[in-house]
Length: 419
Ligand SMILES: *Cc1c(COP(=O)(O)O)cnc(C)c1O
Image (cartoon, rainbow, N blue to C red; front, side, top):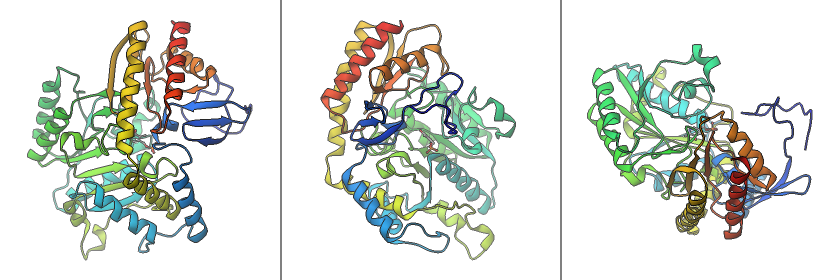
């Protein structure tokens, strides 16, 4: 435990939570702390670790690449790990997504997607400036990504800097028609560059889930009105929802797609924004002013790309989706027992993501019960971070039966304690 460290932590109120565990190493679903604890990482270190921490093949790829080529300017230069990764991605992602643009986080992948959409319309001589978003969305914490996300306590102080968007109501079960007609209406007004969505599951917004049919209908409406469809698969990608991509379950191919978190198996910061030929072609010209004006220092870092290539090999060689299906059914069995015993509402699941709400009057992200439960879980050696009164699991796919059992017991005991 480190006190009075100069480190300023993200999404952390240092005035309330002083002790911060120091993790020395990890393996599979386990985190080993400096003071000798073994903590089960039930949220994949914030949704990134897919196969498990320190997967040997990914570790080996990182070590090998680090010794060969650590970093390279990517404007007008290239390297084998990036070339292999781009080809590997286009081989397994929807075939229309022919082009791969690299960046280094989910937020930057979203910024890139928004800039691509605006650039597409501008370069084609039909400039448009409206972006449509789904209510309760989260797309990252940079200014552009915040602008297309839910407004609230997270970004109130920065709101003067956020650009204006049009918000489509979330498609709650039974109220999908309201969403679809609002989308249709917003598209009809015109001047809409793109609609950005988290497919099937809205993560930070509270693990809110909606149907594949609705996703498909939203895509159809955008196509009909010539509005670009951006899928933010940063959380939902890489098997989380039971398929490689959430969009697959709706038979949807977006015009632009963002991937990050699990792209390297969760081992290194890397993101891609994939785009169709028309998006790329709008920037392809002999006119230098039409090039895509975006880069960051570590674009397509070779070590991160090597880690992502090792991730693709794992997807080729190991039964990842079988593992996810198996995990999903064990999670469901555990949550059913908890929901029968405690005051729980809205039990929901999409693939390996399972969530339920504790029935209390104080809800929302800053609800007191969230922090109380987090402390209760941690006291029982479980890393879980409820979103307000919403408890969810998103473990690495390697998690064992025994570890899942420990998580269920910790939730059971913690609920009895805090309620
Ligand atoms: C986490 C997340 C992001 C932001 O990714 P970072 O790598 O944290 O910048 C964007 N979109 C979604 C859907 C996410 O879950």
